[in-house]
Amino acid sequence: MHLEFELLSWGAWSPDFQTPESWLQWQQPNGNLAPKPDSPPLAHIPAMQRRRFSRLTKMMLTAAYQCQPENNCRSIFSSRHGELTRTLGLLKDITQQQALSPMAFSQSVHNTASGIFGIVNNNTASSTSIAAGEQTLTQALIEAYAQLAQSPQPVLVVFGDDPVPPVYSEFTHEVELPLALGLYLAPFNSSAPQAKNQLADTTLQHDSAQRMTLSVSDHPPEHHSQNNICMSELIHHIASAKHIQGKLCHWYWSLEHHA
Image (tube, rainbow, N blue to C red):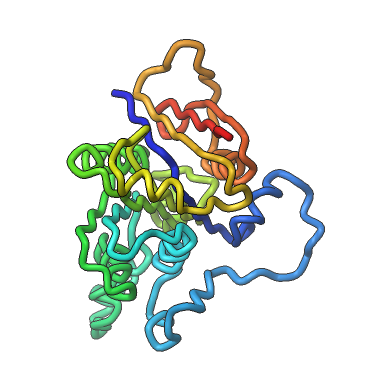
């Protein structure tokens, strides 16, 4: 299987890199020792709403917001672990025979971020939630490819995860978390007018003259690098307009920039 996309815009958040510009400094010595917030501020959302959100939801909403998608766009939210921390808290309350918080219960489902994205943006377009273990992000891209084949209007893909609670740590090893990534995608070389207009009108962070294409394959294309890359490395190359090839999430990724 080989997937190709036009990457219209992107967004990403982690505790160390909280703005699109900061991803340019990935792997460089950090001379700024000022403390950083461990959760996105979501200043564009009223405080009464955002104070109820988990860090995972805030991260994913931030990545989505940075993409600046069209109003009422389709969306795909993907997370391997979802609201596991909140769910574990509810299970502990049950074992201790404590009353469950209705708010915590309502936001403990896997599609919490997807639902809240629709609410805060008055977005009534279709939204899908994906969980597929270590291949969660690539399976979200497969869903995006299928949706774009059905209709060429751009689709927003958001991936996010928090570290699992310590009780589950022996079952997983994910050193990059917490992290969220947003990708606003259109069909590759689309002839659809709306998709072409989106390519022309969307201003990519850092260099509006750059056009980005993203390819993902379940087998190594000819002359493709098989070196492992990490998600932060991929985001850095998106931010700095650099080509990259490598294996990520058991698939082969290629990012190319075109003037």
